[in-house]
Image 1: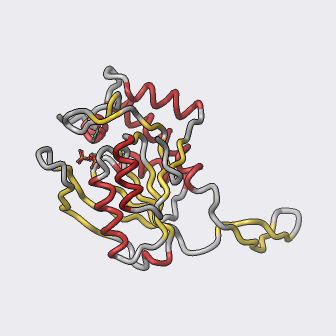
Image 2: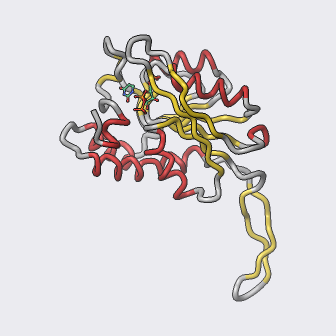
Amino acid sequence: MQAANVTVVDHPLVQHKLTLMRRIESSSSTFRTLLREISHLLAYEVTRDLPLKQVEIETPLVKTKAPALAGKKLCLVSILRAGNGLLEGILDLIPSARVGHIGLFRDPKTLQAVEYYYKMPSDLGNRLVIVVDPMLATANSSVAAVTRLKEGGAKNIRFVCLLAAPEGIEAFSKAHPDVAIFTAAIDDHLNEHSYIVPGLGDAGDRIYGTK
Ligand code: PRP
Ligand code: URA
């Protein structure tokens, strides 16, 4: 199953690094480094159609016109905690982006997203908003985050993750058909605890070395 609104970033470097991340023996330090590297390549893909405008500049030789990003600075939104692992690398490429944070954890019993923090830049409605979270499992967290952002005025939203489950893509696309998903891979299924299989385990725990 692949919904129309999904881009799988199947670049060989992304796939190779993702395989290293999945390995149980990869340390938190290795995991974080690889996530940052992959996030550069995901950022490249999610921003490839950003609008440009011609600006006047002066090189050491002549005055000329050259392309520069147009429009209001975009907004990156990290779904805490694990979203921060993707956020840092994307900020490397778009350092002037505004950054919002939404704190959500997945209740292990109900699997519903529980919000504990919300802080966004102003003027969401006039910015491209890129929401980042490595894992799209049931999609309860990402659906809740995007719903909250729409309530806050966001109109133009994209979602970037590392791994998605087919079930999560279906649920997310049903709830937010206007939001394009960018992912490095679509895995096989969710297990009885709604973990992605084969997956990489709990992304937050792997980034921060918790259990
Ligand atoms: C993980 C992950 C997503 C969510 C995905 O976060 O980072 O936010 O689970 O699952 P879902 O699609 O079924 O909602 P978690 O709740 O473990 O919080 P953490 O980032 O603080 O570890
Ligand atoms: N959250 C994770 O971190 N990993 C999963 O496999 C599912 C939800």
